[in-house]
Image (cartoon, rainbow, N blue to C red):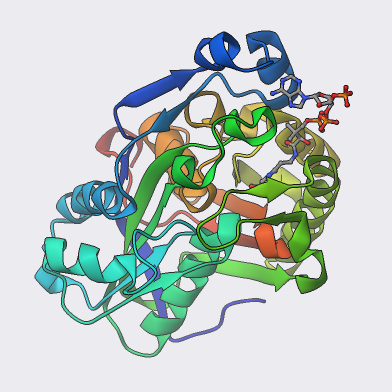
Length: 320
Ligand code: UT7
């Protein structure tokens, strides 16, 4: 979809949070039938974080994003929180974050698995097109609690973390040039976690489908924005496996020096992975004014999402 509204949005603040407990590949090597070499070669992950609650991580990331935007919770009209690991079945984790950050207006969770942050980004733009002025969008996860820590197939992959952005209304199109959101419910059994249970995953099949849907979705967003991959300054992919990222970016003809990667330090943090990688790239000076940035993810559902942002919004002073 190409965006065409009188009221667009721009990102004016961002923040991240990672809990303190660092779990290294050596920690798994000590107690599971696995090796640092296997994990690093097959996934690219070296460490992930455990601990925290989804709300506590979301509050920390959200507070940083508000401070950077020069706002308080009272200035925010809506909080959208993308998560697959809410702290409670009822109510939404967003409602707890709303209380702690003293946010006005609506609050709800979005569960689109690892595509959740990009789904939320598009939904935030929709709310702004309807007249809301400022939205806090958070991706926050505590995947360690839904991962069987004795299962070498999944324990090594998933971690906890959060990333947040503040979106503010601007006249005209704003930052979002195009987006593509999709889901194939027939593939939902490839990756699921029953209520109260652990993640089950058919890893190889998820891998295969992931590359295809990321590439297809990215191409759709590029074509809708009348861009080619040469026009992309940065790709921020979902951080699941470095081999998935490399395969998808190779098919898109994007060299890895234009790709944001944090999974070596975070593992797969589902809804949090794209904002964690985006903020890392911004803070390392990898996003400049008017750069085209592609966000692209896939996940359980099987969901997928891509969006192209032209970075007209805030940047760290040295890059502005
Ligand atoms: O957010 C979306 C979520 N999920 C994903 O994106 C996951 C997508 N899939 C993947 O990332 C990969 O499929 C995995 C990393 C999960 C697995 O890598 P793979 O290269 O597809 O390995 P495999 O499942 O084909 O397993 C190869 C071998 C198997 O042993 P055998 O049957 O060949 O004897 C596994 O049992 O590796 C074994 N294995 C391990 N060995 C050491 C599986 N996990 C481990 C492990 N350490 N941690």
